[in-house]
Image (cartoon, rainbow, N blue to C red; front, side):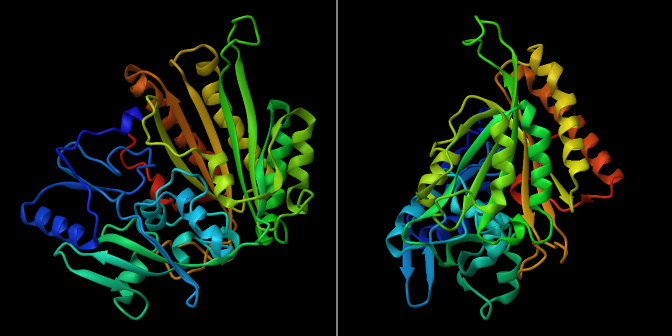
Length: 416
């Protein structure tokens, strides 16, 4: 995105772990500011680049090796997830990685990692059994439960500020030979209340998040139409999209999604739900591989909700809609589009990591984002998003469903 681009003084692209170690040692010796880039998928300025020093671009640390006997795969941080999934297809296996093709392995894993296998295996980082790392002194270490155990735990979801990781060894997850079920079902504005009720139902005990084979992402979208279907007159468009995943290549809609699909069919716009599909194919649908060269400007902010009710899911949607509808419809910010994500995380208070989630609690990860065209609108767009976030927090706190926990990859410390 245009607003997170930086112009570093130098880009260093190591081909080996030894070269990465040399770079870190040299940068430390000269007290040089640097940033580390894996996929560069973050919308936060400064997360994977800098205009004040050096970028260490890990794209050539992209090996993928499988140890069938151990049931593991060693993955270089320079890989994008779609490449990893394709490589693992021949083994009828996968790993708990990213859900969109362009996401990089490094940032995803060190930030925690929301994957299709979240309900069964926890965060992606919970399935990492070993790290190959480089310290600030240029020392190369193998980090696991028995070797450097404190660092092993600290790397699981902290964002990795302690070292540079040059390889992750993941547990393999078996995949049916016929593939999996998945896709998107999108529907119009009139279906939003009923679908949000179904998202709340999905998170009830014994429902969707309790079916470890499932995974759901719900996204609401608002923007002006281009006018092609209305005689050139631009109108406010608002719809809801549900990305569904199921580990089995079932031929009918899995029971956990029946409510969502039935509600969407009242004003159906699109459905790509089908089986069999490969995981690589689904991630390409959810996000095409790119080089993050979009000229749009964008920011995303997170909010974590616990044990959400139908009332709260609808209430948050109304706050979001009220904050943006007039601004979008009146064209006050050029090219403005805004989204609201609901991502049921299930009961994630487990795993040997530093994420600090409570046992026995249903978590919903929500993201609010906006994109626009002109730099001159930065201040206005950010101000609106800040105001929206504050209203959301106030509302969820009042309802007793707020959690201060924040997902690291979307921490908006650089937002305001």
